[in-house]
Image 1 (tube, rainbow, N blue to C red):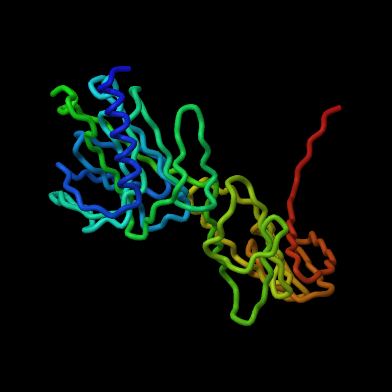
Image 2 (cartoon, rainbow, N blue to C red):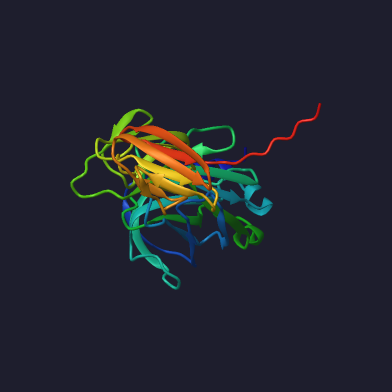
Length: 325
């Protein structure tokens, strides 16, 4: 290693420790903006110079976002000159980043030279309970920048003197995408519920108090609604990662009901009263009921014992069977 590169490395270390966590004012050549979506891991990217900054704007709803993955494509003109260009991350940036604004003030949280390779990936956690891990392809940062203003701010700058013009004029391709937690949202919409009726909601056999904004792990879940005022309802629902699923449930009264199906030329009587609501669900009382079908001189009578919370179907079918011997 030449004396020039050793001095450059020592200068860079001094730069890191002297400026880190201190508030500073600086100017950039240009400000670029990247906007992330809350429910997709789609990348958004831009091409920048080595004196530019990027504001990565987060969606308003950050429920499913635990971090940001930033990928930097480094050209040979920069990777060949080790420690020549650095990346910094700031918080408390003022004013709010926008196109045309080049002067900023903020607190530097992180400073590192771009590595001597053609691709570099960092993962920035945004919450304490994140599940982000280091691996051979990416580096997790061990701090959480403040994002109450809705963005994260990155700055690129040359930190070595004597680099060739080709390096100073080189461009970087920077991409960003959200790192999503493996959970989704469930909203349960109940219809047919009166204000004085009570119910209990269980999800995977665990009691749940609210119907809206239920955060669940991705995958299949069992929904069970129990009540003394209407029939129990059981559903299975699949929750997608970072997606909202709406489950609509129509509650049914515990009053028993009956559906009568018969040919059009039959007269139907329920408890000796002619029944005209054929093929439709009608409510009936608990206890014993008599159903009578009349087709000319042909008559069938059946007795039905009705229980609370049940639905019954009485279906008169005329079948013709032909056999051959």
